[in-house]
Amino acid sequence: MVDTIYIVKYEDERLDTIVYNHYGHLDHIFTILELNPHIINQMYLEVGTEIRLPYFAEKEVKEIQLWE
Image (cartoon, rainbow, N blue to C red; front, side):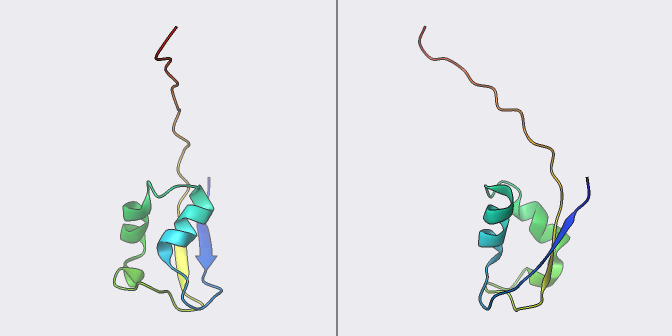
């Protein structure tokens, strides 16, 4: 799959919000920060900033049953 480039559209957007909206969780936030060193020290992102959001294969969720 191909990475997504997200362009910040609104003033004061935050990376954690963007990542959560894109993936539904924050499991990969540190990897995304490594791929986007230009935003490491920014709490709020500027309009027009490009964020690379890589494709991650979905983890298989194994369901266990506690009681039979």
